[in-house]
Amino acid sequence: MDSDTNTNANATAQAQDPEQALLSDIESLESELANQRNLYMRLAADFDNFRKRTTQDVNRRAAAQKEEFIRQLLPVIDNLERGVASDESLLANPLREGVKLTLQQLQQLLQRHGIEPESADGKQFDPHREEAVATRQDPSKPDQAVLETFQKGYRRGSEVFRPAKVVVNDLSHAEAVDHGC
Image (cartoon, rainbow, N blue to C red; front, side):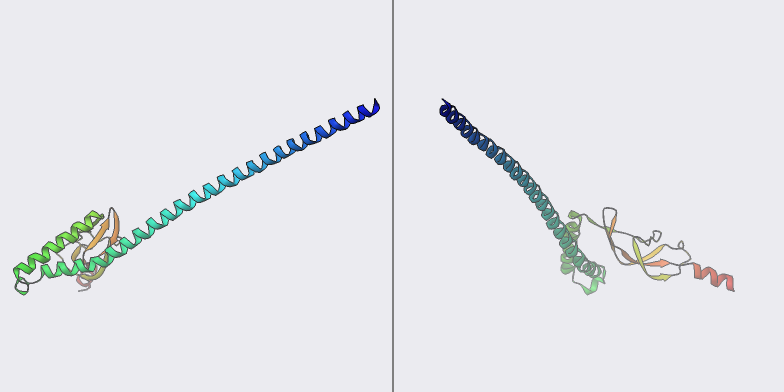
């Protein structure tokens, strides 16, 4: 009976070894599956971040191109405004009206994109919103008042889009000349 016992023991040991091997393989596969899931989740998150960055970059580039186009359009509007403001005898009435309509359409287009003209005449000079290109002395106006606008300024919301180029009243030299006499 010894040989039957040994055979049964060997059969039991061999049966346990495959069971043990299967359990070990299952644990190994579960571990590999967990690693693959983790890798998949990381890749999915990386791709989502890449997609968001790409969308932001595209939006930033589009906004920069739009802004550059508007900046290039502003001198055209300036020239049309000068043409409309010129001597009426130099420009035939139907042509003047056509230029006015074109100018109105361009100004409406700017407004749809949030760009508004900003008037500085008569206001106190603000170096954050205007660029002083000349000074003049006019005792009838307050010191540092904007006397004339050479080039209209534009803003987007409260942000300066293009500063106005202005002539500023400078009475500081007039006072020095008066006191020096």
